[in-house]
Length: 95
Figure (cartoon, rainbow, N blue to C red):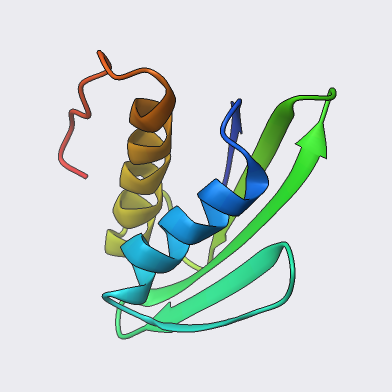
């Protein structure tokens, strides 16, 4: 599956949050603006790029189908990133 999110959070902040969030559970490898996190439940690839001046486009790709554990983890991460910008946002759902 592939997920997208556009945020005003700077690229470095998104990458730092990804390292904290996924790094606790999975092995990390990556380059400047991308990371691959691998674990027992699957693999998620994160890439970030500047978009439209002051926005950051986050792309998350998983190696499994839509409601797998790795997909739930990826969707939860996007909710956490959204909450960093919009403090009133409540992360809900089974993920």
